[in-house]
Image (tube, rainbow, N blue to C red; front, top):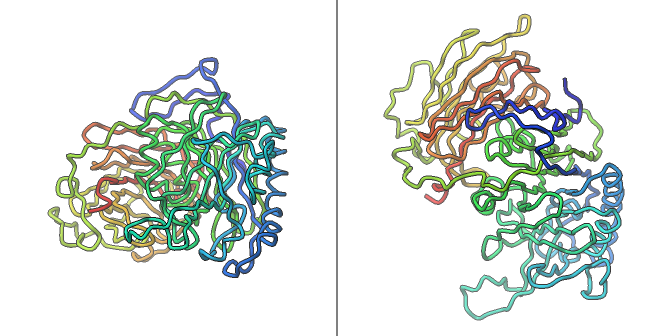
Length: 514
């Protein structure tokens, strides 16, 4: 059973049968400390002309309209017992500004590691900090930790040295997360390390690894949107033992592998962490999908076609995870040659495994996947892309006279469209039509349920599993296992709906710059 805001494997029950290392874990509720988290998916009020500079007064007038909505949601979250509330990326000012046109929205945000400041009780300390003041008072009034994303300004010294990272106008402009404690104190500031085509913002001179501590759940780490795909700061935070990540995002959905809730859940499962993810709600920009994820539960929302374009508050009680490190260090002995890895431009040239006559190539997420069709209602299939191979054992349960086409795909290479990063992927997908070229295209619905075991031998320990059912419903995998030899297994059965995608998404962070 599921609801529009879906909650899987309730924390109250907490008999956990999900496995990261093949062992079944049993946890008694009395042994677990917990807290109440909230995330808000925001249908923001946009500036219709973001490339036209506005005065500070006009910018504030726009910002206050979105802050009014934040005020309402913070009060609602507090009434439901929330101790921490996360708002999305770009939720106050919106998108598509130029470096100059965003100037009226910028505020200087002091570094909490260098000075102590409560904007609500000390509003006169800094000029032009109305947004910081209002967010601080919002946290203080509702007695909760509050995370918001805003446009930040930091003056920097102009130098004659041409290698200086200070921009020519003498200031850095950052996509910035700010965190306020329940008394309004500014406790953390994080500058996004991996901007995604953001003309208005700079990349920080050095990656920032920012955490903050809470009295109810210990340590949280901060990342923003595109950061989640990269080593810095995400994996660095995890390797430092952080098990709870805050994730404001303005994520444009990309099926069949990187829909919001699909990848948010996959990161939580694969990294064995809690992820608090807040997204924007926009039909025009294909943005929706927020959630509160733990390794054994998911409370999430994903708007459906035809839904009204409105915000959604999610609140859930979640366990405090022990700070024991989500990952060990990735082996550096894995190289392009011995992992089956090849760069996209040369993948067709590196294939020591003879391709089956049944395989074909089709584009998925702009990458040339090698596919093989599932021709029977049950069986075993294998497919290789270069020396990287994926294996599937399956039993399919088509509904009525359904003639849906399914294929198993493999890709090992460098993704180079809208970002550059190295991956190894095994994916079982429903094709969009009945021709081979439709395999890898976007699909949201399916009728055929599937029992399956999907596996591959990966050149990285950073592998993220997902099972996505029809109409954007997440499935909690029955079994997920990583072996010391790189073998990864994803096993699932008794699906609630037709299978859209089952995926093992491996990130080869150490090869990103090769």
